[in-house]
Image 1 (tube, rainbow, N blue to C red):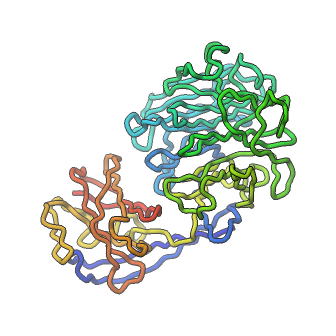
Image 2: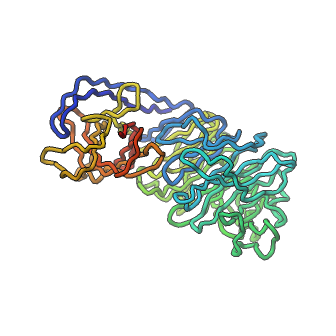
Image 3: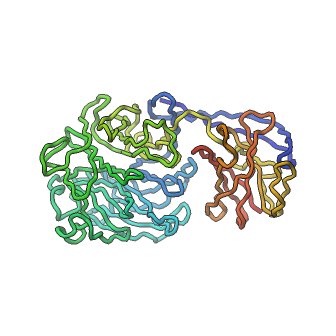
Length: 504
C-alpha cells in the first residue's frame, strides 16, 4: 500500500506591481496524507492517489477534454473533473442492477467536441429485460434533460442476471464496438440468430455497416455481429496508433483469455476455453488459469494499452497491455511481441477496469474500494496553484479579481501595452527541466458558462527567496464572461488543481 501527499499552501500577498519583488506576509504548508484505502502494492518509483465515493463502479472512460466518466451499477454516470468527483451525476438511467446487470459502459462520439454525444450501455427495465445502447447529449457536466436516443436494443434476456458484457468503444474507423455476454447460455455464442456472446459493430446512429463480416449471412440487427464465440467479454481495448483490439473474455472454471480482436473470428466458447488447436476457432493470445497464486485468478476484468500521447512510465512499458483480475486483485503486463506477461501491482480490492490517461498515468477502477486510483511515475510532489486557506480562490499578485481594465507590466519582461488582461498566479512544484522555458507550460480556463479556453503562458520565474514557488503570468483570452472561472496549468503531463478566479 502506498501513500500519496497533497500539499496545500496558503500565501498571503501584498498588492504590488507584477514582476517586482513582492512581500509575502505568511506561509503555512499543510501536508494532507491521501492514504490509498484498499490500494495497490506497486513497483518501486510508482505512487498512486485515490478518488473515492463511487458506489459499485463498473466501468470508466475518458472524455476528449480529459474528464473521467465512471459508470455506477445502479444507473448513475459520475464525472471526475480535475481529480475531483462532481456531486451531480452526468445522468441517471433507470436500470435493472440485479446480479451483473446495470450501467456497464460509456463511450464518447468521435465528434464529441462538436455534437457532445455520450453513449452508454445499460440493462433497461423493459419486460422482458434487455440490454441497450443509448445516446445522450452533454451540456457541460450534465446531460440535456430528455436527450436520450436509443441506438440499439439487444436481445431479450433470460432470468439469468450474469454475463452481460457491457464495454463500448469507438474504433479508429469511427464505428461503435459493443461487447455482449452470452447471458449464461453458451449456445448463444455460436449462432448468428442473436447478438449474445459477440462483439458487435454499428454506425454511431445505430445503423449497421455493410462491410461487417456477417452482413450477408445474418438478418436484422444480427448483421451487427463482428466476432462471435465469446462467453462474457466484459472489457476490451483499442491500441492507439494501430487500431489493434484485445478482447478480454471471462472464463468459466479453467481459463481467462486475452483475444486478438479480428473481424469474423470465432473464439470457440462453449466448445473450447483457453488455447486450442481447432482450426475453426481463434486461439487466445494469452490464457491464464484459475487459483489464488500471483499469476492466476478467476475473472479478467480490465485491459488497456500503454500508448499515451505523453509517456510518463519508463519506456519499457510503451506498447504493452495492462490487464487486471477481479478475484486475485492484481494488474499484470502483457508484451504482444513476446506473448509473455509479467507482474505489476498486487493487493487491489476487486479491480474492474483500467485506462491510461493522456498524461501517461494508469487509472484502475476498484469496485471493492468504491474508488478510482491514479498510478503515476515518478513520485513527485503535485503541481499546485496556491489558493487561499480553506478555499479554491487563487493567490495572485495584484488581485484574484481580474479587472476589465488591463494592468501594466513594467519591467524588463514587459509584454507591451496591448490592452489585454493578465494575471500572475503563484504555483508550487512547477519544476522546469534544463532548457525548458515558459513555452513548456500551458494553461486552461473554464469560464462561468462552462466553456474551456486556452490561456497563453507568457512568463514563468522563480519567486525570489522561496523554494518551489513560481510566478506564472497568464494572458487571458478575449471575451471571458463575468463570474467565477477556473484555471489549471500543465507541465510535463502534470496538471495542477483547479483554482478559482473572478472575472469582472
